[in-house]
Image 1: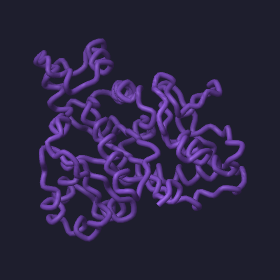
Image 2: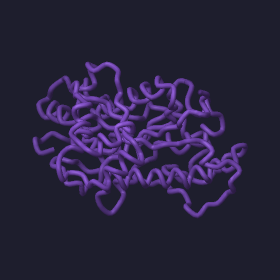
Image 3: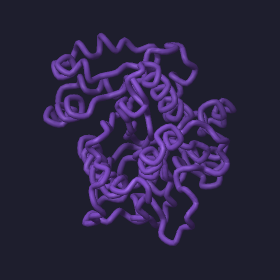
Image 4: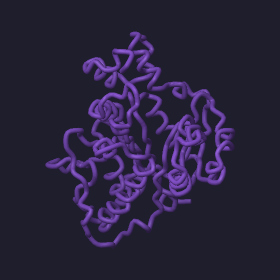
Length: 307
């Protein structure tokens, strides 16, 4: 199977990211490595989508802080970006609606940008700041050259990378013009592109809690999109899936990352990170990247037990 005939994947992780941890970033890396090893997929981007402030979770700090921390956490990645769309809505969005937003956006934007592969469109893509220079926005200048999607897939990969790997400033960004119509020389449908929900086994287990999830949403999330699960704390994902009729029904759409079940990052969590910060525990450096720690201390976040 050649690189261009593999299923192209964008990994989307929704959550509080309160704060974002090294475990979250490793979840992306482990999922990408696993999907590549199957020989059937090529991951061309990762999206971190922090939840809206009105989610109502106790101790949830402002999305302004969470977005900045997320951007600091991915600043050295050449394929993971932070998307503020969910935070900038009027109210909390379901996971299903976030997936549908990115699917619809991807169809619309790739239709525009891939319309002329020899001269990529300069139509602003989601997250591209206004008045930016023309330096490729998908490549962080501090990251050593490596075989990114752009290098593997040429102009097609470059166009997709523009969408998937930009890290927008929190203050202001431009959405793509949904009415843009630049032709259809290269159509989105000519390559198979999927958005998969990336999650830990704890989220998968939450599907089994009666009444917590809307069943119609679960059908869409698992049946239409699909899930990549990175187990946490050596969780038994087969047992979890057997407890839900919908998970059993769409078992083939659930890909469980089977690498090191004792991976050190599998026990890292935002909860442990907050507790470490509150107690001045030096182990916080094992949970959070230094830029995130510096920002937390500067902003005096999570100091009180309620935060």
